[in-house]
Length: 272
Length: 310
Ligand SMILES: Nc1ncnc2c1ncn2[C@@H]1O[C@H](COP(=O)(O)OP(=O)(O)OP(=O)(O)O)[C@@H](O)[C@H]1O
Ligand SMILES: [Mg+2]
Image (cartoon, helix red, strand yellow):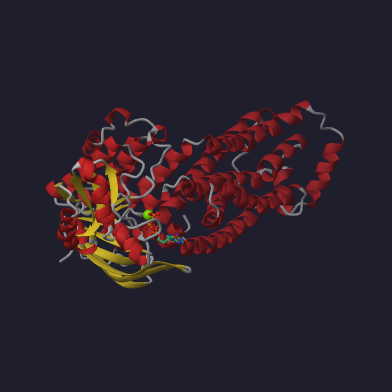
């Protein structure tokens, strides 16, 4: 592997991405909304609303359905604290995964289909890189920034939640061990899912927009996780998150293999 | 050993036979022209020779390497100017060059200086830190050339390097090609539609037609060998123009009177003496007989007529 060439391709892709408003705006707004605005609102809202009546009985009912382990965990909190902990630690966990997914998809769409659209792929194809090197470089171009944003987002999320909820919680209640698994094990796999889907879509799509619109469908299964968690169909827990990560990695490996098979100089050049 | 040799290569895209068994060799230091109309197979040939497309049949060797198996090693030593400049328009010229210097493994110790030299040589220093999207077509083409030369390739493939350039820039490109081959001994494979350009620059040319090689040789040789009927100019006494035209029209020469005293006719070289005799017998005073040298353009159209059975 020619790592100098790989680094050059990554540098190129990232420089190009940062020059595009259409790419950068969602890349900044979505993480800020999901990982800063949402936990801040959650932690602040109970202070301004009357939570004494029906909401708490509903919450109790909700909590009663939860697995025993989770119930035990929440038992140490009072009513108000329980709302915050439940939402910040559990309800928003699937939403956090949207961030690496989105960042990886957007950048992969720009790096694969966008490069086709800008007609810059041909020069790259004539460089002394191997197909494998080009492919790895392009995967990393999307995966590395997705992970960087996911990690920074995690830190911001934790800081925001702890600070905003301090009046209620009176202690540092985040991060939770489940989140460590989420960040180090599931988030990279989710980023891989976003980018490998885009690699496959980009083989057919001719433009960034086209790829992004088709490949954007990958958020649907993720939304199912969000909805499933919110409606109590399933409960995120350390164990479940670990298994989820495992399943995603398996899907990633399969998709990336397919993508690699399609990513041959000749095939790519003929489709230009 | 020839620098490039390609033998009996075919390449099909679906039903389209882009190359239909072509063979030729290019020697070290030669400027070799690949001529042919749109879709003749020039770009496909360049791609095969750089191992970015694979032949359906036949083989090639470039710098002693097989492009199908040694593509990366080979591309380290070749530079390609593609038909569209293929530059990152969102980046500056300098960034474009720095990134490709890494991709082509220009020694890091020389990198900065090499990039500066290239910018200087292609007169882009002043605009080096502007986004390429704001460049004119000629500037983009110069930058693309700079990028192709960054790693000092032994063979340079130029796919229509002057298409769409103004005459001044086109001349600069011609001078560059001449310098690269004559002074620096680099091999150049030039794809072009511009026959005047090919005649000026190329030591030898290959003419492709529908993926087949229809002529190969030095432009002058091809012209002498293939083009038999040449335009010949006659200068005669002005008041004898009509008589001269009448005499020429007795022969199958497509004679035309340009203006008083000036006529042209299409003649085989061998027919010139007879024609002069006919004019003399008609009492015409001849001041000058000037057979035009056949150009590559004549070669090209002669071949084209043959191919299409005209
Ligand atoms: N990717 C491709 N898919 C399908 N057909 C192709 C592809 N590339 C080239 N061809 C076909 O192969 C033939 C040769 O094309 P090529 O691009 O080599 O011609 P060319 O001589 O470079 O033409 P031009 O002067 O227009 O650049 C054409 O008929 C073209 O349609
Ligand atoms: Mg072409």
